[in-house]
Length: 388
Image (cartoon, rainbow, N blue to C red):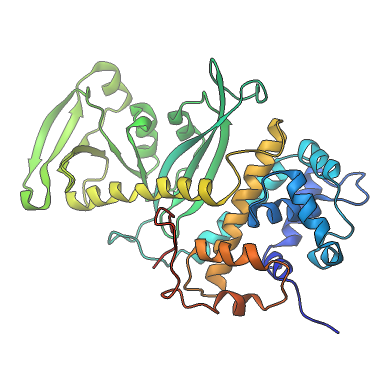
């Protein structure tokens, strides 16, 4: 008697497997592979992410406990730990990176109509990085400090939906500002970043490309004021000025005028913003910079709810494979949330899925059984990027 698809299979059906197959073929991922192919590897690693497994052994034991259902999960026969470990070590991580990027592009189209926290029609990106500490004796390929290894996730997120549009994984030594050289600049878009990205030569490239940036000025910046606009001090604004840089090398790198806005936050801090946009109200610029916090929430969210702070393998290929499949899992759940028009948060969806992957309840029914307003989350520190 047909009992319906497993919840895990229903979730995997939302993935574009034909696209995945083309990417695997491009990199030769299934060359001379008889049984456990790249699709099986992706499903196993996604299962580990969705059920919060701590290791490959843990993942394989859980799958073996449901051996009668593996065929219906798309895995075929049972999975050996050594087979999964070898796949993570040897199969090109770029397969999963390119697939994750395809999912990110698709998710951004689904969330393109979502409102921003500011009244602005342009695309707004937030750029930042997060560091994941590693053991130097095991991860010698990722040097960071004399006694520590680390990798960095450099991430550009689209603030409409908080969907990553660009991710680069590097060792811990790569300075954040170098990532500006790898971005494909979108004319007319806003790039919001902290003062660690202040490099006037690179910022001028953004300006020449027709994009706008919003960042914070460094405390030792030397500039001449050319013009001051009136501001309403009751809103927290202190000044709104047109300036030019006054140091030879900085001025040579950025010869055009900049806009400097000084703002006093409700928390009592005074912030100085730099931008190349002279049209938006000064208060909107301050609000845009406040939106940058969404990328910090994104990093905290994925570290809390996805398995990327410890790794199943120690090679560079295994680590990058695990991170990119984790990103794919995050974006997949975001896509399902939008396609099914769910009102529950991403956190709630993951909690429900983690307990019901082997059930045969229709996915839409499973995720809409509970009223999100009635659900109480015991841990007040949990972060909900998709809460309404």
